Length: 309
Image (cartoon, rainbow, N blue to C red; front, top):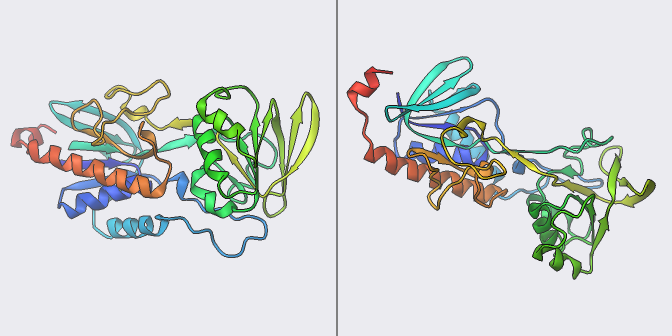
């Protein structure tokens, strides 16, 4: 029986775990691998040195601190989360069921991947799925953004402040009449390629150019980097029967990262809160842990509850 179980790693998960440790909670963090898509460095053609990602070093330090404590981390896959008699029960694949007073979900979201030749071998070598994480890297460069989600349009506006040229590849008209799209129309270094689709990404060690098609006619774009934002799949399946989610599957949270289920909190990209940034996720995880701490204080363990587990 624990005070708190944190599900997931990445910036939000390790930040929550470190906060819980500081408050001397009996907490365990359960995950298979260290996650966090926003923390992946890019290597562009001709790039000298590693890309700097604000907050990445802090996350690494947090993880080292957390994993140095015995029994603070359980490397396993969570199968289900349920709640009975005021306690949460977290079932894992290899270690059975762990119970806790409170739970924090920090499982993130998985981007829909490009399914074109060259996309997989050039991943992290000019191809990325988190636009706003890498804006400083592409200053003065030619960049292609694939997709017209709200995140993609926000990302293009941010990129336009520093990138030399941006090609916004829009296979359909989704969100192209939105206020964000109207802002994009007035940016001199953004070219909208309406009705185009990517057919291949070409490069040896890193991205060199794209092959795009319009009405069956191919053309070539020389680019230094490609960012795809064709949708996110929030990893919220574990709590969909416990808490309210929005139509896209993101977990609804309030200003304290509390879900609609008392004692269940969520942090990071799995939530409806705006994020996709390491520093934001760090704060998100700490805030969720602070809220969970308050909940645990208000719901002390009952001896009979522990014995019934």
